[in-house]
Each structure stands twice: as structure tokens, then as C-alpha cells.
Length: 112
Image (cartoon, rainbow, N blue to C red):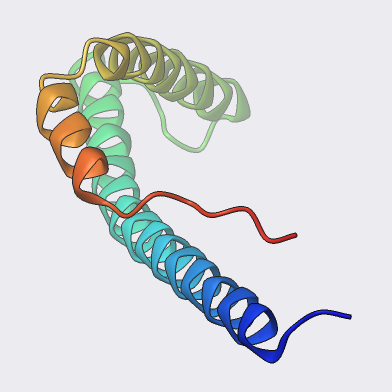
């Protein structure tokens, strides 16, 4: 039979793990919200830039072919941006800071 002290210790460990998980997920959700707002801003900029390019070349914006070209060019710009920033993320300048932060966190204890 398990002692009451073991049960409360396991329960406390579980609460600590849940708090960490909730904090991590909340932080991720907030970061995703900021990223979404940033993406909307870039979306407007890219669409305006592509439309400006087509205005310079005097294309009629109502032609479906021109709209297709705008969509393809916008997609190309976004794919190049995603590729570039995904490579940049792998070479994070924040890794030493992140490692230091992680080392300050209490160790996970296995719940038996």
C-alpha cells in the first residue's frame, strides 16, 4: 500500500507538470497570434507591391489572367520568404540564451 506522502508528492509533481504545460502552450498561442498579425501585415504589403508592379506595366487588373499572375507571384515571394526564414531559424542567435533558460528550469520528475 502506498503511503499518503507518496500520493501527495506525485500529485504535486503532476500539478507542476500541468502548470509548465499550460504556461508553454499559452506562450505558444500568444506567439502564434502575434505571428498571425505580422503575416496579415506582410500580406497587405506583398499584395500592394505586386499590384504596383502590374500598374507600372499597365496591365488591366480585371483580367483573370492578371489575377492569376498576381497570385502566383505572391505565392513565389511567400515561399522564398518562408524558406529563408526557416533556414534562419535553424541558426538561432538565441540558442545560448535558450539553453541557459532551460538549465534554470527544475528537472522533470517521473510520475510513477
